[in-house]
Length: 445
Image (tube, rainbow, N blue to C red):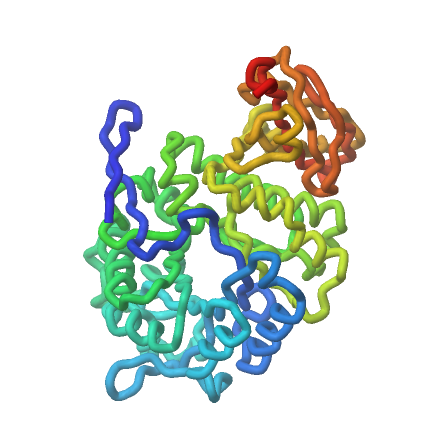
């Protein structure tokens, strides 16, 4: 394991290392999670149905890998050996890993970093604390590896507040992170199994006055593949901007451009995609914006929606190969606002940009192999024109560049200096690749 060192404002900072598991090198995780859809109503039948629907719906072919079982799968007590047990709603839970694998997917599980999980089946039984992983990290890592787990969502939100007297009362929050987060990471490594390690809720400690939590040595011994950059997503278009804003704010103010903090090996997770749940009537244009936002921010594309009854138009958004390619682009950089970032009222910039490393459209027709992706969002309160300028993208303003509509999969045209799109309200957006024309000497090669 390699621990990287960077300099932030003249101060040497040790950065969190990635797990030695070979995961997260090319792009953030993609998959499905049970929580937002089912919560504690999850059952084995429901979960198996989701696996079947993911397989039948072409999601594996679209790049989705993980099918993750969230909280409330476990019994409220450990067995006589201190091992976790499957709950009554999972009578053959021990076979789920094999079932997921038989469908070509990877199996994800949930554990709590504290002595309880966030959602107690019997909240009146405060002595039933046996199913949290605090003090059982090695044992639980071995147990989930035996279940065939390929992904761990390790919940830290309820860890400290749920601790009873005698647990961690002497810990400071930074100590908690250093000891608990790294301890599970080391335990996962020691299983010898490749298990994606995602840890939750860094903003808990940012609010407590502990800055740069991921760039300190908290988890450097155990490492992470991804970490939550904010709080739980809800079925609301308005929350999407807040979550993505959190990723970008973190990348800008805390990472200082350091790759392990905002890209490859340590992906910032904006929580599950709820496109398709539609309790709040997210429309198709908003859904496309929602998905594009996640892709530009390199956020894990982990759905939590009913795949079996999914609207075909929503499915086409979630399986759009061109947008997924933006999230998968191995440059591993978070797209950031380049115009009006972090403006008043919680609104975020109208134009975002992210450098690309993969070949772009028309690279064989006199254009560069790589370009920049620009996400252009409409303003608030009516139609408006949004312009992205080459200067803001690091492109020669006198250069011609091919503009390609990523969502629609079509060339828009060749432009010089800037490109203007007419969009409507805050729900309309366009995601475009901007690929500059090669210099004359290069183009003749």
